[in-house]
Image (cartoon, rainbow, N blue to C red; front, side):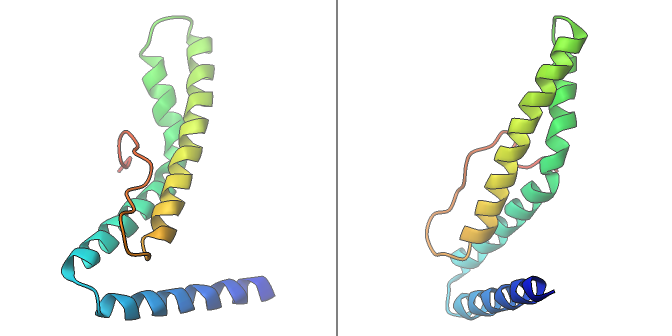
Length: 111
């Protein structure tokens, strides 16, 4: 319970500071903030979908089906971790001014 309260307190302080900073920022910063947060949250939420998406891509390939599906599962797991880290970095670092483009992913978001 104490950890949850601390997390909520830190989150509210961060949102307050980011809002105060964005009042004095220009339109370009606002656009980057919105697109970075949107991309980050979509990548965090869409990361678990990377496994079935990758297995489906491997399913269409050549070779033995079991081997393709196992390879797709492991590749999808690695892609899921990369997408999750990218989403977290986008979400956390978007409040810092500057260029935060993140790790280039293909596709940039799953949805």
